Amino acid sequence: MPRHCHNVYVGAETGVLKGINVTEGEVQTSNFHNLTALERENEICSMCWGDDEQRQVLLGLRSQQVKVYDTVQGTFTMSRQLSSGSGPVIGLAKHQGAVITAVESGIVTLWRYAESERVSVNALTTGEKLCRMRQSPADSAVLATGGQENDLQLWDLARPEHPVFRAKNVRPDMLDLRVPVWVSDITFLEDARRVATCHRHSVVRLYDTASGQRRPVMSVTVGEDEPLTCLSRTHRDHQVLVGSGRGRLELCDIRMGRTVLALKGVAGGVREVYCHPERSYAASVSLDRFLLLHDLDTKKLLHKVYLKSRLNCVLMRRNFSLNPEDAEEDEVEDAAVQPAPASTGPELEDEEDDLQIVEEFLDVPPEETKKKKKRKLPKLKISGEDVADASPKKPKLPKLVDMSKKKKKKKVKAGESKG
Image (cartoon, rainbow, N blue to C red; front, side):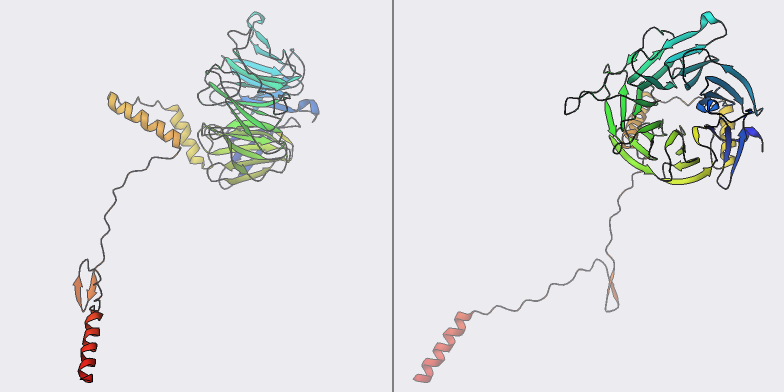
């Protein structure tokens, strides 16, 4: 099987990159590594795609080493040792052909060939350690960071001196005690101005950076004392999938402010989840050495693959499908140029916009209105003849008799008998 046919990639604690080809009928796995020995320093701590065509996979190791794996050639094409900060690589991204790295000590660096063009940001001015760095899908120059006692911050690499947004902690609790902060993962929603974070203290928070409010606009509590470790946006913009260190996968609806679904099959602490941006597939890896593939619409566990190593990271291709023919069709569609839609009148455009708003709010596909048909009464057969709309006849009531007349007649007869 060609190496580029794998549609899921996972990174293990041993430093081995594993490629998995998941279809409806079978699962095939392969190991890719250039290691002389399996050591703790070679642990893969972060992964991301290296280009828009998803031909390269970037790997960030505990030893602050960055590797590039080419999925077409099936080899590691580059390896570089970082020289900034300390601690493992907790975030990777790509901006204008250059690699962005973030280490646990809080140093975020945009690596360019010329040292004068490099950009470095210290995202840990307060707090103990940086736990996650994510890139905005709308603007590759915008980064989000967070960690232990280091709340959400948004950075623009064009203006790296100060963060463009800095979150503010929630108000004290009912005992007037400060609420601790420990951001474990971050995800951008579809409009890119809303950012969701999950915390080690069993809470998911939503921030609207365009509202002018620094505190979260929504907070969702997940379980009781659940240390949330990872977070991913699903194919529905108002839902996120979170995983916990106790082996729970919860689907949270940030519009309703509660959890709506708990996925089954996890036995170890969840390290990372990855949801397909357009389809209902969700992949997750955990310390129980299993790769799980769920369908968020049917709530079913589609595949459970044992991979022999404790897993940290997972990536899923954009054209992922259990049917290989569908994946090939998606590749052809991505390569083809889509024609521009036909222009419509202003009145029709306004009506379509209103319809889309209603459909998004209800989250229910539109249904065609059907005219109600009048119900016809069945024909009844009476003595062999058809009678339409026959109604039951009213029963005949007995005639009323005037009791006063009867009494008068009795008195007259009694008087005649006496005379």
